[in-house]
Length: 212
Image 1 (cartoon, rainbow, N blue to C red):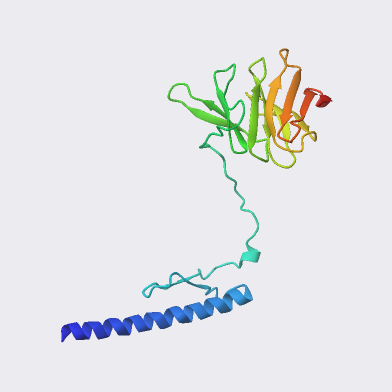
Image 2 (image 1 turned 45 degrees about the horizontal axis):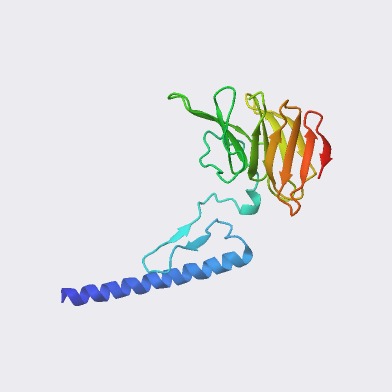
């Protein structure tokens, strides 16, 4: 008798839950059709198809999405970047200060790996993945180049992460190789286009001297 009663009770419970999920689904479809929940903020979302899952209700002070698109007052501060773009050319440099410079996605990471006080700083002057690095003869400056449809190269100070020069406009495809001249005055870059275009810059003047 107990087993039969339990089975009947479970069947009734499952039926009630199925009706509740169907009701929530109907309210959800209606809400999605209008773009928002009702004025009370009772936007309903069916969590799963299986009976036994309750609906999720938005908080009573829910703000409609179109009114909550303003950025927050605060901002995030990058402390550590994981990853290493091993496919990039010149992907690991040792600077005059003993720090390592390497690319990861759109960042150049300046890593102090000595002792237990390992830390990272960043050069964030790129808008697409960094494809190439080159170290200035002084060991204190780095050139970095990116991919994308409008690639450019930068020369920047390792100690301050400040951009000293930017060379855009020549290459139509990713810049895949960089090199400084022996005296550090000139910077050469090679593109990934079909002709592997070579550009030579007086980087301090941000002037292209030749291309081939």
